[in-house]
Length: 605
Image (cartoon, rainbow, N blue to C red; front, top):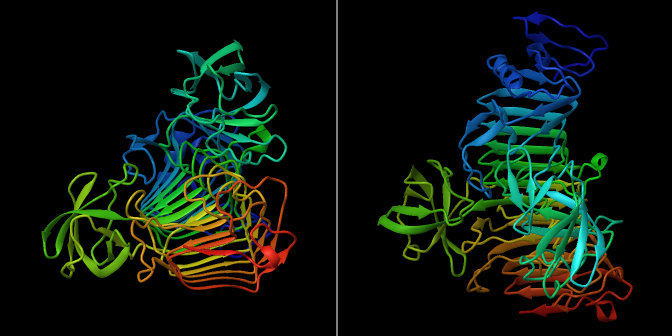
């Protein structure tokens, strides 16, 4: 960005652009939103002003768009409206876009510590078909979030009472149900997660079953506004503890916080995402994305327990290198990181080299799945074995679910209707280090890519599995058999695996969905888990299924007794249909469950 100077020089260019050489280190064209009449801290709708400032950047690259420090409010009125199929997101059209960066190159957006405050259902930042984008020094939040929270104030024999901040989460009681109302929307309570009052950890043994099962026939009344009593004839199976916090989940995931699509070389630094209407930061079919000091955590200044509506970082169908350094997550209602591809199913064979494929999950469809020249893996989905590869000659969408794919070579005999295809070109290398995975609903880090993966020097306090390596072509259709994974020097603390969610078989769970696993055809390979520290209160530390070459070496394991063990698995290590496993040279401290005589117990299935 150029050399830093101690003095500031402004040169007007067409009245709005400047060359700025100063303490910020800018050495390119600088455009300020202030040049268009937008002032911070006014609560005025910033959308139209910012749109004009973004358009002024076009053709002036390299360019820095500057927000003078302060608060900026964004309402859907005057927002761009555009249809996007965003993966793992409900298809609500059009998406409403507060800030759209489209077709720009070498642009930096510097918030100077500003707060971007959203209203109603809206996507704060969208980066489409851009190259060389830096987003830095700002936060994203809502005054009225699209998830609510409450403090448990009283627990009775068949009821409990909660206290809600009505300025932040206004509500009504409608037909005996708790319904939240916001700026242009209303949404009924759908589920809840309980957090401890002091640690803000998800309460152990609860997960999605805070009230047990069959709780939705509850009745809500409000003795006074801000206090809600929830009761059920015959009582609930379980009750939250008085003083604890409940995150009251409602509404759908329909807009990402930051959406990156079809873009290259996107860098985010010093960004705080306090809340979103869906996935926190979503990237699809983009390459070379770097996160440095990016957080998706509750806004402590507002007394929040909740942060994002769903996942923190979600990267689907990306390539190049994904770098995550010194980032933080807590209070999310889904996994902090999920990196994967998308498998599709062959539903019709048109000729020896031409097929019709279908997106199988309702929240992963409508996307341009492949491009001419891309390499495709052909998967026999009972064993999940990749039997052949080919390149794409042409891709033609039929509708939002189906597309026609022509390949450069004939289909093998094993591949017909019912088989799965995976795009092997759009698969990234992933480097995640020096980051903090705090207590959230579900797991910590999900990664499914054949690229090189390094997970190093991180801290995990996940309520479910800390790391999940899955992959399937039968349910979620999240593809990506791993080929080179190093998990090294991480600290897996005692909250890990304290609640059950899908695929939570151990602190590190390697669990592809394979209908008929076969040792001859392992799905994953070359996974090394070394020199980490584990502080488990329960038995299962490692669960591995269908892996060729898995090692668990040089780790330090010391038991914690804060929580009571509950997991059905009573071995430290479980290996299912694995080959070439090496479990050795690990240090056991204290009476670690599943380590009789100081040696990890291993069950092979």
